[in-house]
Amino acid sequence: MSTRIVKETDVPILLNQILDELRAIRRLLEIQCRVSVENERTETAGYESQETPSVPTQPVYTTAHAEGYLKRYLTGRQVKIVEAMDVKPENTVIRERMHLSYFMGRHYAIIRPLLRDLRATLQRPRPLCFDLSKKSPEEISVWTGICDRLFKLYMLDFYRYNRNDRVVYLRVRRQPFVHNYLSGGWFEYYVAQASQKLLGDRSLLALRNVKLEAEGGAVCEVDLLLVTEYQHELSLAVVECKSADTLSDEDARQIRRRNSLLNVGMQRSAVVLPEEPSPEFAERWLSDTGSQVIGCTQLEMFLRSL
Image (cartoon, rainbow, N blue to C red; front, side, top):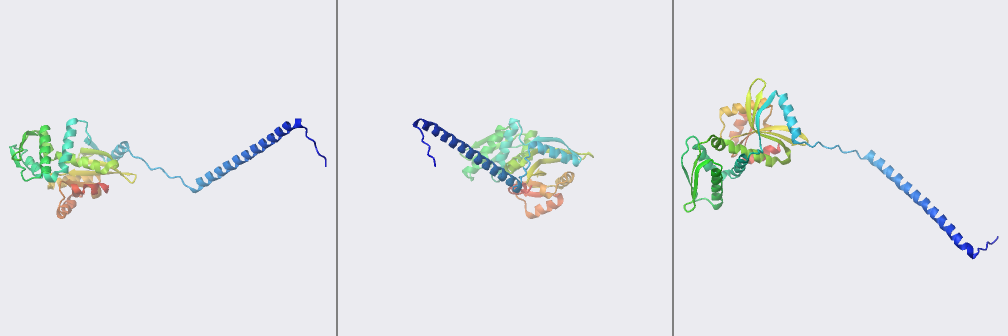
């Protein structure tokens, strides 16, 4: 065995050679490591694509979709909209009336006597006097708040509240818009707003005072027409508002004709009254009209079923 004698001057050269070899080995190891990682990722991605099916995206409906749906629905029934109003009008005065209507509807149990007497004097306005001395501070606040806003919206000729005697004096104005509002318009406003709040994002389209005309010339009206979304499907619903807590034979005929024209059954048609009707009353009018007859407290249940 021969022994090589390394000169002192050769040591730096040998060290450089060793370092070069070590660097080459390191580069080879890094390349092999990267290849292994990439292969593993490719295999995992292929496995996931085979084992995990892609989840289909659900449609997101907008007002434009609802408008298209309504147009197709009415065309299929050979019906067209002659006139309709938005539930969110731009007119400032109308918005103020709607705000008042919602407040009145929320406190209907308190102000029922006021609305009853105002309605009774619409044809022949006369001074009215209401004694509030036996009412609670909250009830007095509701009464005076509503009377004050009615006066500011030009629906009362005069209004005065005597704080000492706790007596309200007022008289309704004899104007067509006042008659329409106090005879039932306020309740339509209330139901429209309450429906919007209860439905939330499910309400895609809402129209008030809708006048419909069939191909043969038949005309019907809908107080509130809704297009809603439930479980990724659109559907149409109609609501009739009756603030007088009564229904006439003519009401029944109109509602029945409207339901037939639009092909809506009891699940998507309702007549709403301020107070919950008796079971006998509701059953009778369901039979006569084909619509559910409900009170405001049952409105949420009806809307949830759409």
